[in-house]
Image (cartoon, rainbow, N blue to C red; front, side, top):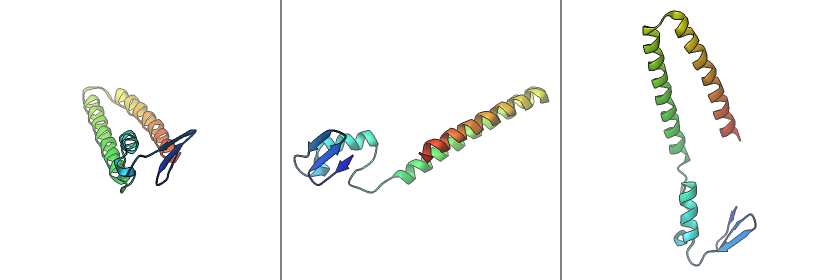
Length: 102
């Protein structure tokens, strides 16, 4: 996708803005779709921090549930649950890392 002062080029589509690009309906629709101001400062750092916080909260919840299950069950069940959670965590981390890498 290429933005110029007067046109947007995306693939085989070429669209002209009618007036100021900040006021163009096309630019507004792209900003909504990408959740980012196209002619402003980026807020990607805040988005990354928000996602990191969400992941930490979810992992904290998983640890709490695992601890509660471990208190009510025997050691072998807890070991199996921890093994499964470890494998799932490694797979999740690998997928998450690959997505952000590419």
